[in-house]
Image (cartoon, rainbow, N blue to C red; front, side, top):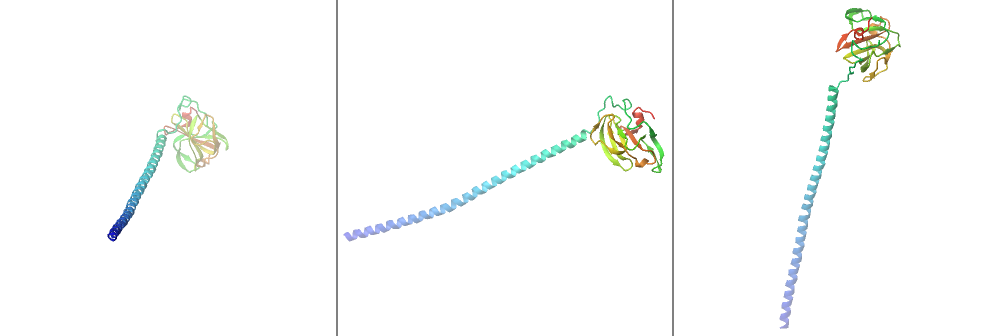
Length: 235
């Protein structure tokens, strides 16, 4: 009786042990597969999503910044260009600088060695006939040349035929060219008052056969006019 009971207990113990081992193995497999299958895909998904989001935001920020900067720069350039086109530099017309009516100083001496002529006249230096839309005022090299009236300097340059030349807008669309200068004391864009020195007298290669003089031209509304007439002077 006792032997039979012991055999039963041994069988029950073995069955319980076997079942316990199977449970442990099964639990281990479940944990293993669940860890591998859940950890990697989720991390990859999170990383990919995060990377894509960050990259997109950075690109978007850079694109917006660059586009905004370019637009602002372009608009600034357009405004500057438009301002330059619509607001040209001119000398205001006032009661003291009205052509034919106001007082004008002589740019050099009152002595004239060659008068204004729209007709062709012989030029000894150049050996040809040409118009002389200017008045040549006699002077000595180094003499001071002055502004005939208040004005705005439009240009300063060196000419092969007339040496250093200063172009001044004296208001009322009257523009004067002071040619044959040895040195210049003004610059483009500066304002001068009547009687201010603009340079010193030099030579005019195109009229080298004449005495030392200032070759002085004036235009009114773009057309050549006699400087002495527009200044109210006589020869």
